[in-house]
Image 1: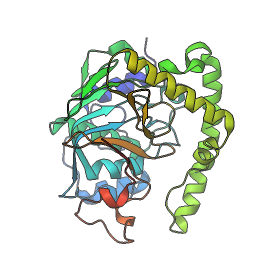
Image 2: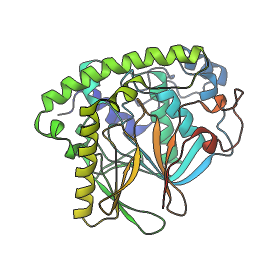
Image 3: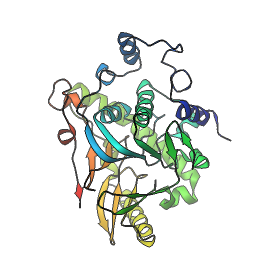
Image 4: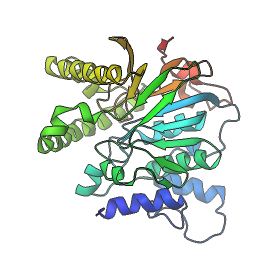
Length: 328
């Protein structure tokens, strides 16, 4: 049986409205249309910048497919404001949510949900209403949704795994990837313990991020920096990537798209293309596919209005805001 947190999630996905969704405590319960001034005031109380609640840019970056994972909504470490800015500037025909979108582990311990987290959920639901195909592949932190594979909530299809065909005809297995994590699979108590320690590190990250913003510096993750320089962590990432690539090769696909380890990468491994779309607690990355089937990693460390130190421009800011790795 789902606990209270997951009942709230199901209601939100099923209805996607402020009136019906318990994730929407800051929005009015009546059916009247709120004034923009009221929305702006409410957003400021919830910690959202006015520029994230105003009109969307007219010329958004268009992608064929967008892959997002490890957002961890429901945790203080989630960079929901940066993700919201990214979503407002990027559209796609198909959006894959590749696991750990909602952090059920954290929500079971204590409830955390900010205005920015509300806004991210509503932005994804809005894209589904506007015609985007949204596919949710649950991970280990939102594993409760695996009991609901095959169902549709608010225009979002919940599927255990997916074979995605790119514009150039290649076939990619889309999975979260926790199936290849021996700690999650065989010592779940240790995974939960590690998750708590990771939360402490991310809390320090948030404090450091706020200090850097005061000095006009972009987002930078200390925990990610240290993780990629500790020998055991590097070995863990490497063994994980090898296991995922091997499984993809055995299943006869051209590549695999996954998340889980919070390490974005596109790399040819043993005859298959390994793609990890990263996360939105450390690296703030997404994987995109264009109309020619080219896969790219996009990094969104700065808000759109910080690209040139000025206000938001109604232009396609993707090239300026991201570091892109292309794979043919």
